[in-house]
Length: 131
Image (cartoon, rainbow, N blue to C red; front, side, top):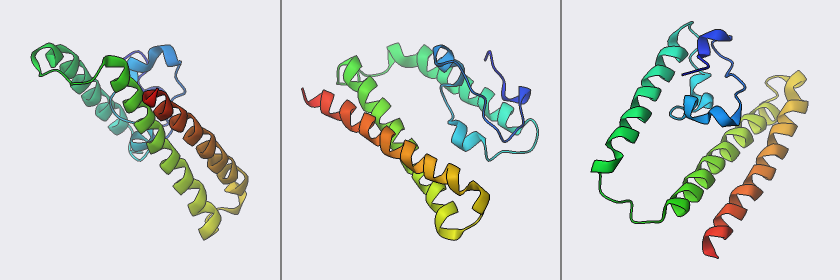
């Protein structure tokens, strides 16, 4: 892992260069952000990296996926985007509906707008699979 989480506040995921996505391929930052005790998120990310490495090493001995590689990649990517849509929508809606932090309302609205844009990208990816 080139960018360990311990280099930042434990509850704040790092902003990473997309080219280094495999350094953080296992556990979502949205999950890791809940582990605020110093060192916990880093330890979990290390376990995630070990699982990812194991999956790559063992993949040749597992049964074939049954779908072309790019179909799987687009399906998995669209699913991760759908997860992010739900996460951002719920986070933004909770702030707005509960009035939990009025000063965060502008960011909550932006989160919901970003979720809508991400949903469009996911939908386009799914339509691409139908072509």
